[in-house]
Length: 143
Image 1 (cartoon, rainbow, N blue to C red):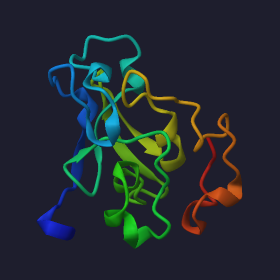
Image 2: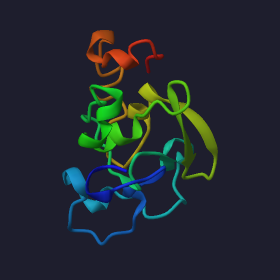
Image 3: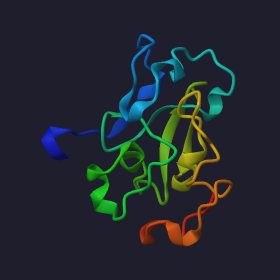
Image 4: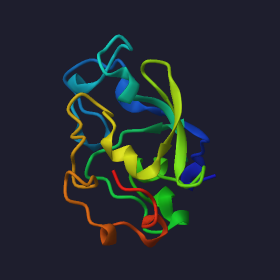
């Protein structure tokens, strides 16, 4: 159980919610960037449901992982998903209804919302360096 009674074993990608346009999700992402339907191209790389410390998540490409494995509760949405549950990976269900094990560093390369930058600062394409990762993640495969 986390702060304020929050708990979860799995969490929904909040950007799949069909919320009316004109407002913002957590982190300032406009609701126009929501998926709203599973009938989209590229669904095999759009997270729907994942191992998580909280029942919902709104990851941003700039969200860093938690510095320490046990401090993810105090972090952002990506930190709540980036948990070492399955030997450097978590399990996910995608918008095309497929399921697979996803390595933790690969979380930043998935298309969480329509404008999510899959080559953001926590990807090799975005320039992340091995030393940028918290020590508990440094030996995991880079993406």
